[in-house]
Image 1 (cartoon, rainbow, N blue to C red):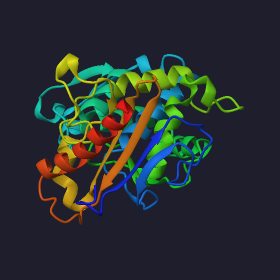
Image 2: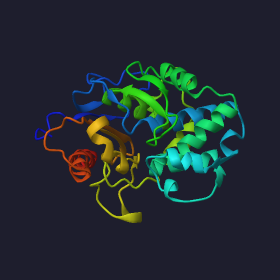
Image 3: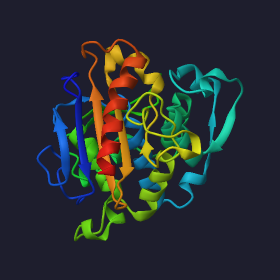
Length: 288
C-alpha cells in the first residue's frame, strides 16, 4: 500500500482478547500508522451494536422489543434507505441494529437512541464501560448522535489498532487455544449475534469491496456498511473493518482508516479502490 502512505491500517490473526492490539502485539501481521487516532467514521455502529447486544444479556427480551422509526427519525437520517420512505415503521431492536450494521441506516440509529433513553439506559456510559472492560484505551467516546445521524450512534475517536483489538476480542473465544484465563468480557451469545449482523453485509466501498465471488458465492467474511459515508469523507475520513477465515479456520482481522487528507483519493470510487486493494491483499494472506 505504498501508493497511499496516509492509509492507516492493522492486520492481525486470532489472538488473546487480553492483548493490546497495538502494532507490536503478537498476532499482528502488518500495520502502518496503526496507533494514530481518527474519527470513528464508520466503526461507531459496531460499538453501538455490541453495546446493545451486551445489554441484552442482562435484560432478557431487550433485543426483541419493538421500536418505531418515525418521520422525525427519517428527517434526521443522513444515511440509509429508510430516510427515503414515508410513514412509520415498527421493528425489533435486533432488526434495527441489523439494518444499522448492514446499511448504516441513520433513521434506525435515532430510533434506537430514543428507545434507549425511554428505557432509562445511558448508552454512552454503557459503551464507555464496555470498551474499558475490553481494554480499548485508545477509544475515546464523547457523545451520541442526536439531531442527525450518519449511521454511527456514537461520536468519538479510535485507532486501527484498537479496532483490530475489538475484532479479535469478538472472535477469540471461538478458538480455545487463544482463550484468556478469565471469562471473556463478550459472551458467546453476544459474539454470535454480532457475527450474524456483520456476516450479512454487502459493502461496495470498504475493505470487502474487492473480495472474490458474487452473491452467495462471495468468500465468507464479516464487515460493516459504509458506502454512503464516503460522501462525507472530506470531513471525516473513512473507516472500515473486515474479518476473514484462513485455511485453518481461524480468523484474520483488518482495520483501516483513510484520512480526509489522503492525496489522490477524490471520490467514493477512489476510497473503494484503496480499501478494496488492502482487503484483497489480506484475503490472499489467508490463502498462503
